[in-house]
Length: 240
Picture 1 (cartoon, rainbow, N blue to C red):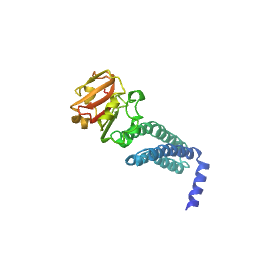
Picture 2 (cartoon, rainbow, N blue to C red):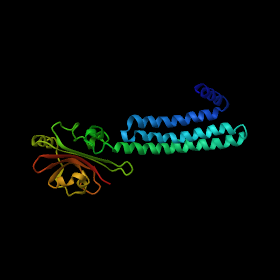
Picture 3 (cartoon, rainbow, N blue to C red):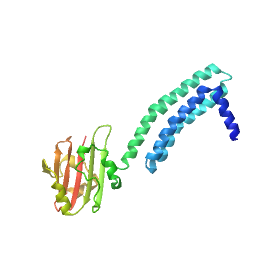
Picture 4 (tube, rainbow, N blue to C red):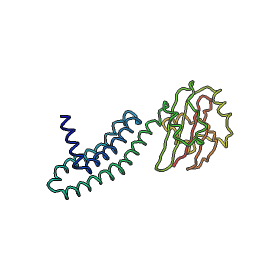
């Protein structure tokens, strides 16, 4: 069986060079995003990479059919095959393929946004000057850790918040590192958009603003602390 397949490939390559190299090109355009998904995506998204093989199998089917019809209607076969394969490769594998891979990448990235174990990776997704006040690592003694990030590449808005319980000494040391422009309660819009699931916990929090504005679309970052000095929230907010 293997010998027959090998002989067929040799004859196919010799008699239909264009079709052969079209199949090779289509295969490369399928295998590259497939491996990218396989080795960089989280488990639930890894095997979505198989969708990039759908155009390849269509190109393969068209090419194999063309190798059969070529001996009967060579000119028509060449024209139709060229148009169909070119359309599939350029439009579906290159243009639409890039859009699909971009969508999968963004969806895969968002998987980390509310999971503290990916904190260090998520932190690197933001401009350093806007999250420089965040800890490089979550303190080992921190408890009740909650995290939420939002990056909207289409509209340009983004935000990041890290909240945890810790001792008063740690919180006072953190506050002592910065000069704050002003402080505010949690009623401002830039604060109400953060950590929405935990917002009720911050009714009595004072937010100390390192830089930014409190207006509707103002970029704003700083530190929030509850009245008992038992909870701290590092935040960056740039709402749309």
